[in-house]
Image (cartoon, rainbow, N blue to C red; front, side, top):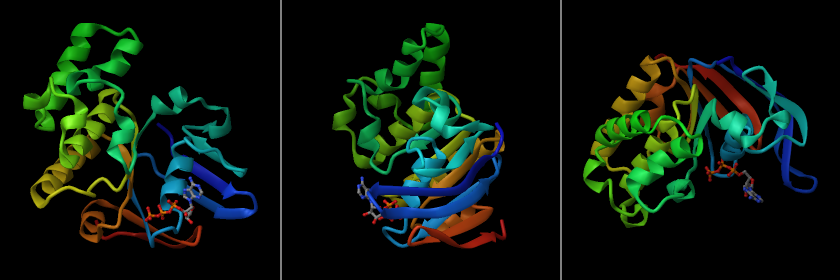
Length: 223
Ligand SMILES: Nc1ncnc2c1ncn2[C@@H]1O[C@H](COP(=O)(O)OP(=O)(O)OP(=O)(O)O)[C@@H](O)[C@H]1O
C-alpha cells in the first residue's frame, strides 16, 4: 500500500467549530506513527479521517493514492484496519468464532481458508476456549483482543489503532506489544493513538503531537 496523505484538512462536528484545523501530514505506509496529545486535542478525529471513516470538510485525504471522499467503507476496509476506542463497536456476531468469520462469509470466500485463519487468530489471541461464547460475555481485555483479531482477519495493509492498550493489564499489554511487533515485521504499518507513553516509546518510529486540532510537534523517535 502507498502512504496515507492528508492535505490541509479541516473537520468540524458542529458548524464553524473545527476540531481539525488545516492539518497536513504524510503517514508512511510501513512505519509506526504515534498520535499523542491531551484529551480533546483531535487524535481520534484525525485517526478516523486518515482511515476514511470521516471525510474532511475541506482539504483532501489520500489513501493508497485514492481520494477518501470517493472511497466507500468497503474500499478503505480492504486496506486499513481501524480499531475503535470502544471494542464493542466491532461486535456484529453472536459468537466469538462467528465474529471472525462474518466478513469472510459475506465475501463468499473459501470456507476452509476462513476456518484456518480464524483458528490461527483465536490461538494467537488466546481466545480458543471462548470460540463458542457470546462476545457480550467477554471481559474488556478479551473483547479488545477479539476486536483486533477481527480486524486482522481480513489481512489489512495498514492499521489505525485507537487506544489499543486501554483496559489491558500488564501481561496482556506485553502480549499485544509482541503481537504488534510480529504484525509490523510482516510489513504492516500503523498509526497508534495512545496516552500510554511507554507503549508509544517502545513501538513508534515517529511521534506526532496534536494540540487543539493542530500538529505542534512531529519528531522521529529513537526506535
Ligand atoms: N461525535 C462528536 N460530536 C461532536 N463533537 C465531538 C464528537 N467527537 C468528538 N468531538 C469533539 O471534538 C474534539 C476532538 O475530539 P477527539 O475525540 O478527536 O479528541 P481526542 O484527542 O481523541 O481525545 P481523547 O484523548 O479524550 O480520546 C473534542 O472537543 C470533542 O469534544
